[in-house]
Image 1 (cartoon, rainbow, N blue to C red):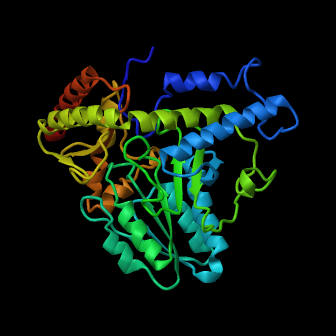
Image 2 (image 1 turned 120 degrees about the vertical axis):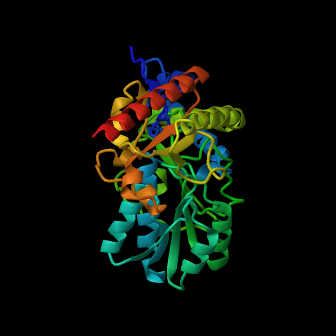
Image 3 (image 1 turned 135 degrees about the vertical axis):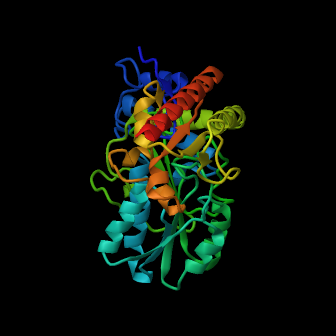
Length: 387
């Protein structure tokens, strides 16, 4: 029995039991286990019907139409398909892309690949509170800019970018706009039409769905123009080949429908818990909040503890599941590139922890986390002073 307190929801969420029940129905011999591409028999047709229902559920949660949704293996693949697919398709109209220094590695590494192919990328620096302002994007656009890629919510700080304003200026300038929205489903309203988004990456496992399934919203009217990065059976209108995983897709559809229906209640409860956690951490003294104090989602709290080393603190907090950075960079010993982009020193960035709350976090867990962090911070500071 795992007795640790889970406060790493930004890395991944547990699957909601209601979602798991829907998935199990697609795995058993008595369930809809057919291949959705097998249209010649009833098993395949019933599986296809479930896939299309889930496509509609995901589309509805972001203000899109079902035909705009392309299934992928997760946000990493969605980011790669959007960025590599658009850039290569439109290479003849321009080879300049605008993004930011604080994007997820799935975006940054895709951009590095394009730089190796002869594209030029402008990486915008956020302000000290982690925000990339629309004016910065506007000033970076050039006559040969074909794409802007900007995340909605930062995965380390929870800071929110104004994607509607950026989308509007991109639309006015005829530049395609991609948004990584992996961290915003269930935390913020998303309307790809109103926000002028051309491509949007989402994943199930940040919203109480299963790992291994995601989607890319692709604007159809007028068509974006996208070159596939996977080739095979021609599924998903030729944009993403591969047998569709019915159970995972059904899980994602159910999870996104729940996320949309319960977003306001979830966020209101988590905001209270997050603020309670911050008050408790701040009382320890010499603790600094990373990211904008207001323009952030309700479930993420990133704090720097002066006088301690983040990995030592994380190791000491064995009863808490927290993060010293993003999950994708956990193997690196370097200080968070996101926090360094905000102007934090290496030492301060390395003394930071990300606490991320979720649907199953309780008041008692927050109180226990406050007590544990306070105890270990004081102990580590005393050890540091002794040496």
